[in-house]
Length: 608
Image (cartoon, rainbow, N blue to C red; front, side, top):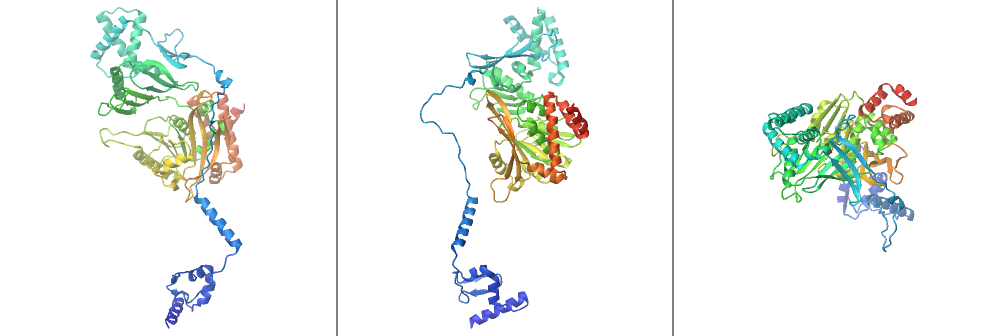
């Protein structure tokens, strides 16, 4: 009786949905295997897609036995699913020998030629007959087994040293202007007049050479950077490091044969070094004390400063590191001449920049990320609006339509007066830039930057990561914490590395990776390696295809053949500039811009 009522409800429910009687047997036939499985279950009742509950006793189907072929197919499908979920790690390495065997070094290691370098520092470019007050000799010290950066300055005897000390004390009392507010020529003239008055008043007897020597040291100490001023004058130096009292200062030389080398400059006492760090902090507009012994800032010439005042946290005494600012940045031609990239790599990046692709330059500390960022920016057309955002001003562009912005640290303890990269990036979007350049992404500003990439705004930035796996880890974990979907908005990642290679310190673009997408469920994006550096041959190997160039073709309507022809033309232009040693910043920019407006004239010029 109860079954009849249920069947009646079933028929009425079917009429409500289909406006006709529902044949249960027909429903089962049309429902196929899925419905059969429902009714053949072990539970007492099973719900289906209608407001009906059918008891198990009403319909029972004997489950059909699977054939061996079906079982085999199902097993294959299960194995495929397991393989997807399983992360396979292939471990490769070099077998470590278990027994001791001394193998003679190759003859090439013994044939390394020692060399010497010598050039003037003050003045940098002396005229014929002009006296040189400071110069450097770089030589290999056989006893120490390393190169030494030896600064040569005028020697002062005890009489002149005492006189210099007395004059400095008098000058500090007499100075009534802030020399840092004057331009260099006026400051030198003012200092000379004060020196002359002191010499006349105290009737100091000096020869012409002694007078010039004293004047050199006073200008060095009052207007320059004291005993490290010769290092600051050397454009071949990238970094200056002082590790403590009584320790030689080290410099990182741009010559790839040298790298980090020891100098003959030493701070002899803790008082001298502490006083110098206080002065550096003042030049950077910062204060330093025992309570707040750490200083980070920028000197007036753009040099980056990191210093620590001697406290319990600095075991070897006060220390500092200066990252020098290049007044004229390196160009694509420099990059090719140094072997960092070849003309094909740069032509590819030129195409990507010109057609509005977003690029991330990734690598370790001092690997050349900012240099490549500056090179990429040179490829931007002159009429485009550029906004650059940095912690420390390092990017230099010749473009007129350029808005450089620099973050500001808090004026006092707390957040008062702070303007960070995140807020600058938010504000820059209201300026309608064609290109956004961020010096380095390392926090919440990355989210805003990648949002702009997703909306089609070309953006360039740098980040610290050595390979694609570490890059994804940095982007998807705190403090950046990007959603995986946004990473697919990035077009290209350029990986940089600085290394010791065949007895030289070199920088290389080790890989250029195109981000194809970041499908859901994947732990890393799908990517395509378009260029790879072969360390054994020191050449850049090109991949089979470029997803970015194909995307440019699809978005612009330019045929793939024309894209390839354009690529070849830009390769030829870059090679011509390298062959003709056109390294001047403005000259390179002029040729690139001329190609945008008069391509045939430029091509005719390089064909001559």
